[in-house]
Length: 91
Image (cartoon, rainbow, N blue to C red; front, top):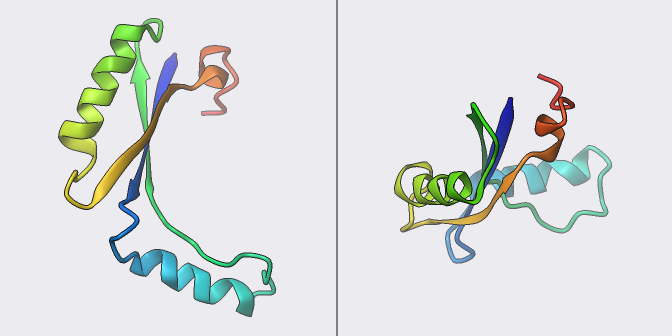
């Protein structure tokens, strides 16, 4: 089964308390090489057929309309999961 991936992130000017909590915890756990964290959302949309340009356009529209809050979030990517299309999706 094919899959489309939609990734959504908070806008840069929006506070990200979850990202800040993770950024604070990383050095305590020995991960000192990371300076900051922003936490977003990932959606996996299953597609019965092939992922066409029309399917990707519909996924982009769904991302803007339903999957994200355009006041505080940006849709950063919408793409076909090639591993899922090749039967390597793992799920």
